[in-house]
Image: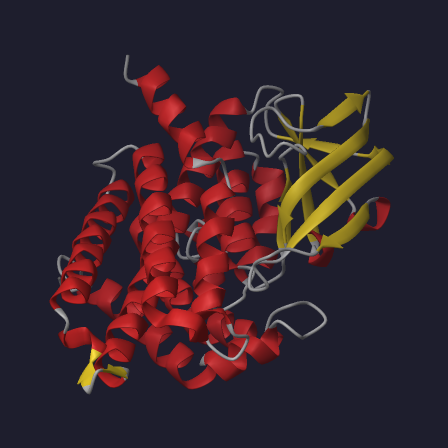
Length: 350
């Protein structure tokens, strides 16, 4: 299935530009160098993505210095980033934070913060609690001060802009007033942090009940993540098929054995079904939670099978298979597990 099917000329141009840049600047060696950087990503590459392609401005409305496109364009970028496992602030800042600020419909805050995000500044949303629940927030509010701990904050320790979800509202907090601690994770290509607040001053943005805005922002992030999972799953499957053509057993490429052919064919079908689910969610014809649950499980299955089909080499540091495997399991838990999203689907479709 062509990944350009049904795209407009502008969308194909966006996809092609991102893919070409990553092919030049984000191969396996570059990704491994990037995760060793102090911020865990290649800041120069992120600057090029923002200044030459405008990826950080996609979700920002035009009146606030952005492009103002829809979820499908965000997916085109995250899918390409997923293919290469490129570490970047795209998902947490340019997707989640930018969408949340837009959905809050607070012009003063948008005028102040969205142009910075569109230019590439890193915005982080402190939201989930220690159990990974993305609901009303993990932070408590006392007047205009905030106290508590938020976990799994994307790029939280690098934040130029910090948005804190507390008691169903969103508050802006000066990063200097928070304790921001990088959290080591299994997936080295996804940077998470722990945000601790102890009486930090907060400025509420938008309404006191921001739950509709929070849900819309989380849905957009979930849809973008589904496409990222599809891109990564496609890449590890391609690596596996290529390996099966050069690895020999009993004087033959292992890919010539019928049992392995069937396994890889099944994985291809699973991948294309996940691709269809992600794209349907991006176009608004499938519930975001359905795409998140399906793409998470598909990516985990494909990555797990890839480990098996590669054999022992897959778990060595030098090979990339383990990087995709770790991304698959980390992404499945991000923004809620497949089980969480299936429960949401059951509630909302009764």
